[in-house]
Length: 470
Image 1 (spheres, rainbow, N blue to C red):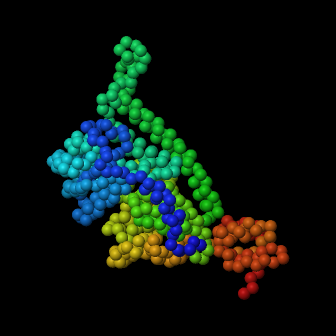
Image 2 (cartoon, rainbow, N blue to C red):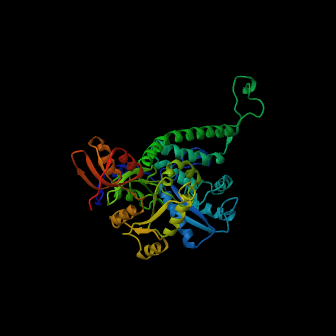
Image 3 (cartoon, one colour):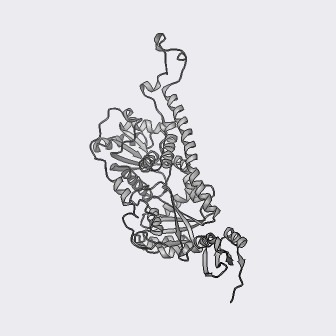
């Protein structure tokens, strides 16, 4: 079993972290634009931003925490946050999100701070985006576009990049807008007037052509994701066939899931104090203190109002949670609103088919930074919970013992004489079961162990029962 020692540079993913930090955005070098249409089809430019949110329910602390999270998201995407504004409304304005009067006030703030982007704390309709942009005269994006941009920056594997692109196209499709030539008809040939055969009549506009190409690309990406998930499905089937228990780590982004995986298994997954630092799922083997083998999977982090496009695109990745025997729900004990994190994650888990009935352990991480009063409050509310620190190793042995108790039991005890030519079964008993004793005799190996049903049946076919001497 992995020793609970301080993780070395390789285990903490410092090589990936160094590569990610090799180039950083330089503030103040952006080109001033005369018209937001110049960047409509480019990647989002997030340099100097102003945040704005609508407070519809809850306390003022809830609204401020939501905007603080938006600030962290914007900084993760590589921007400088200049100001943050919250408006109290019963519901967002259907035209400009914050109302026409407040939109004019926001324009004054943008001009005074020399901001070039406004980020709204919510998902805006295409009409709200367009009208708010026309008022503030700079690029406007919403929370969904910001999260998609972060995912696009951090995706590394082929499957991860395809999943993010699919989610971005799903978001972009209803928001396509046409300026100038984008509304012109498609023409061809050298006929009089440049119209050509097939160009007369209504024809197809450029924006319609863009929509058709996006739909074709989305269909292609879905096929690619389906084929790329085959290898993971095969590995998952092999684990299920061998009946190796599975544990999935789920939780809010930046709660310390990757740090916990590194601490338990030495996986060497990238660890960074940033939102959505790791997107690609990682599955590693581990053993309980009693020697039981199990797999543990790190999954993508969740966040409040996680875009439904991402949940749909990452469904194949989230299946690791649905196929688990136990979920470690990691929550940041030092966060201002850990209960809100728990609720947000459970809301997403409820959308994953098969995840609702799986046993859950709430792992309160960052105990070295958390307020003891907050930790005690969570412990009282969550019946199955434990306090750990993935950074210092506090509580990790207790967590491993708890995992051992909660995993499916090895209820088949065998005491058999196994021929020497079937040493592979003895090896499997060591890997997949709990070996109580091994004795080598003239005719073979006497194995006394607790194993899973499938291995018990194979051992019974080749072994001979041995009477126990009490």
